[in-house]
Image (cartoon, rainbow, N blue to C red; front, top):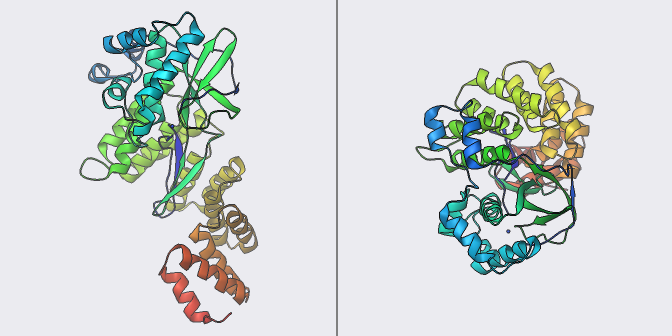
Length: 390
């Protein structure tokens, strides 16, 4: 489902789709035990008629909508179950038997119907089918967001992707049972119950992110299709901060800077504790020649996410430009402790070590840069200048 991307050269933080897999049961702790808002697809379309254009409404995909085939399948799968727990167990067995998770596609966001046809999808896609079948079988099934607890970092060039996670919660009497799709069954965690509108918005947010990463004629971060998908997500659920943030990134890449700034501010307004739009706002202010405001934005991002090395790099870079060398060094050192594979921090520290005549440390940092990015020009020149001796 969700995630955050921090672009160093691209300088943008994007909340991206989630990834993930065996259905299992866990002890779950919920931020709110009140059921999230659930509505029928017909009710959802009537409700969204006030927010969407008629053409958008007619094309609206409700990812957990159960057609006749899904309803018939749910009835068949649970035919021999006598209560809700047995119905839930039957659905789990069906998912395992079909081998859906063996065809896991991290970048494949699909509706329930599409998953049933192809067998492929990511965690949100599998959740779509499970919710559709569970509700068709009479179970009280909801989406759960566990993205804050499941951070997986993977690099793609200068971009870091932080993947989030979505799963399903079924309420049987007073009990909540988490149905997991990432092989982490048996782990107690805290979940947030997600409304149906947010689940639909998240679906479009994922589609936008897939378009953003696809490149080509129709894709790319600033493509019209990505912008439309993110915009759709914000109008379906105006309180969905990740979509506002991503819309800002897409608009910025398209050169629509004022609209991008407005989107970042909307993300901050609806979710003051979400650090990504703070850092993106910092990038915007830095480019716009407002270093003091940029520094404040980066400092707020660090305060909200002190364990994020990229935010510390951004703040350290601003502090360095402002002549606050000691404070910048502190941010870079803390950033390196958090993630020693971030070559930009290693390079800044190498330069600072040279200024302080700490030549051994400078060489070590420069060599680490070359381990991470073979042939990196600045590190190579620095080593040539210092000599390669220890």
